[in-house]
Image (cartoon, rainbow, N blue to C red; front, side):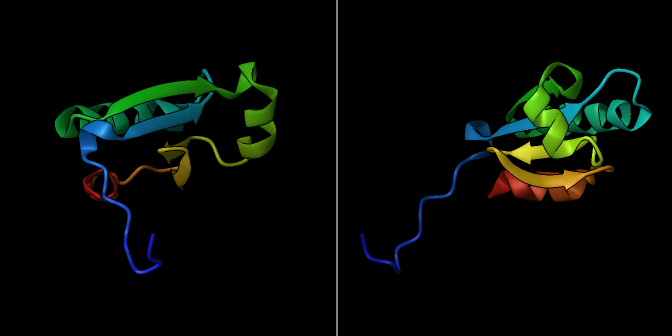
Length: 91
């Protein structure tokens, strides 16, 4: 493949958003609402992971929760901007 060729952009329906947080976290509750709404509008799948149940996630993100990943890459932390997440899902 030529280094000048770009990978095809994924459609929103092919993207996966991961919300990393923990129970009892009000910022995580706020982020969950934004992620659920934006993903529903865009047709993207989303999942939630609890850092209290995963030692590796806890080590990586405990100071940043809630953390949002798009296709496994960190997108944001603490506060989720719906417009920015929507743009990320659009490609």
